[in-house]
Image (cartoon, rainbow, N blue to C red; front, side):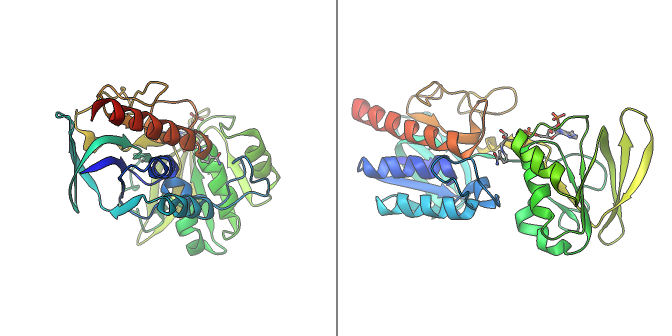
Length: 304
Ligand code: NAP
């Protein structure tokens, strides 16, 4: 049996693993893909304190993984399919076996939400993408679009200009949500054109994406925008389906936590993007992860 099983190996989970390892607790991180989470698909992170020159997401998260391993944290690649939190010993069911733990930290993060327009599912992998850093290179000298006006969308648009001939940002209102410094970079980039007050009505094409049918929400007019790729960045959705009623979630599926990262089930903690919070960034995720690990350590001391 493990002292702590951490579900998810993004910045929150990796930091929890580092702190649990340093507390000499037998700790396992269960990660579905490679460690690093969403941050590992971020091209440039320039708001992490102490790194004024900025760094790539993979660089920061690989170093976090190395640090967690250095202090004895174990890793397994598996998808968590279910949990049983009914007993004192918690059970985590995965595609790579079942694990028992005295305490659990849920750090399963969030993934990019689907837009839900016609053609989106049909052309996923054939022009519709949710990861600019993964797929940008396919669009060398081709026009692409990004949907959304938040930090993810605008950061992706800036990254895409390294490859694409033109990057249209399609945003449903007349002001961006992204951080001001990110907005300024986008406005200054000659390859980026913002299509204001507009939504994507349909993704069109034959074998691959050829155009977007756009609706201007102010005038009600439709038009076709020829692009070879479209990157959807219309917000996040928490990865909590596997919890299947075992802990309390809010209406959107995020995990409410106390300031000590406790959920409503004793011995089960949550950290990072999966929790109810104002700011979903690496800098807040690592703080959550550290707090969750120390709270879990205290819970184990008091209860086992
Ligand atoms: P977000 O901040 O929720 O932004 C989602 C964007 O999509 C908004 O502009 C929203 O429009 C738009 N949108 C939502 N539903 C839509 C729909 N049905 N049709 C058209 N547009 C729609 O999500 P995010 O950009 O993924 O960011 C999530 C969190 O991660 C934030 O806390 C963000 O700060 C953080 N993040 C930070 C960084 C960074 O600091 N480098 C990078 C990435 C993400 P409205 O503006 O009109 O609501």
